[in-house]
Length: 467
Image (cartoon, rainbow, N blue to C red; front, side, top):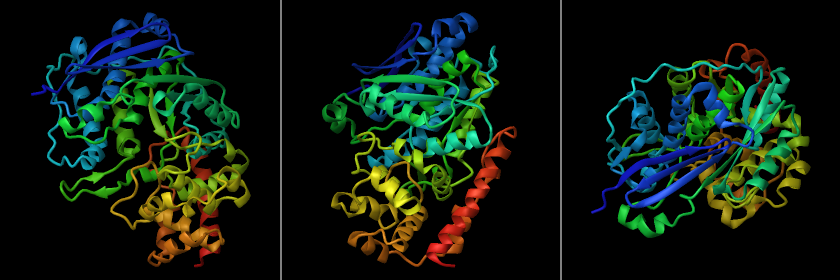
């Protein structure tokens, strides 16, 4: 019988490269991070070997959790067990349970036990360091999509200086095309500096499901991309002196895709982007690693309805966005492309959108199921980073009111129940500053722009859909 033991086997680093090696029983995997503009050895000289190794153990631990999709019984930090603390085990276990709810649902594993850590906590935790350099700019994570564009323009509008961090991952193809796409968007803004990371991963390309999936009882694998990216950015932030990472996660990340009847839990594809996850990670980083580095999402107070309104102010930059996780910039045959197309078509200028999407994605038979599920007619919304059911319904109704639907779109719109427009706008056009975590130094300039966009969105939508 397979032991199903997962462990971190080796960490090594040089000036610009971090190599992480993992074992699952007899299988070996590796993930490599490149930091082209950050000298990791210089960072080690400033803060010492122990701190830098501790940072890299965190990076590795949130990379190893993708391999935990193979249902390990145990987890070990191996030769790095001295960094095992109760706080770290608690954080990892919480994130694994929350993010992997979707994986458990997809693989029909409602009774799956938690992974058992076999190391005894040796580190007392705490004792975070502080930055030895202070940069004025914030570090804005830039994935290249609509949220990155709005985030960038909100910071500019508020007079907040920022640098950007773009990363290219091998699961999305070659690095150079990915970075070129992001560079095209960043060039439309006022970033003071552009940082990069390149991630090479051999797990997702391995035939693990084909060879071992039936034996292990799994059909899908997943990853905690947001927590991984935050810990991977810490060495860069500490090296250059950034005090805040600015994310582009909006309010819909707080709403799950379904309530799983077998367990009663909220299965949320976007939980890693939620306000709950953000607070958990921010508190942990400050308490355990670097006391004066934090993170927040500038978009957390608003939903996509307001984000699309903010996009209307920068339609000339829309061509530089991309969001597809299948084939960049757009495959036009996945739930993410379908959702973005629907939102763009509903809220933005027809000519601009048709230059990006030359076909009506709702009229493509292969896409119909995505739209059907997006508007709440399926068992659950697609497992993608998209808005809530009501936001898709508003978008579909706006397309109908603007005469932008074909036969399939009109049929789908006709199947929807009557909309409580007042209630929907009150919920999805609100600016919920109280539930977000915007630092007081930056909040006023950001929130003023959001309030203005909220009022504009409500007036425009009411004008099209009636009172």
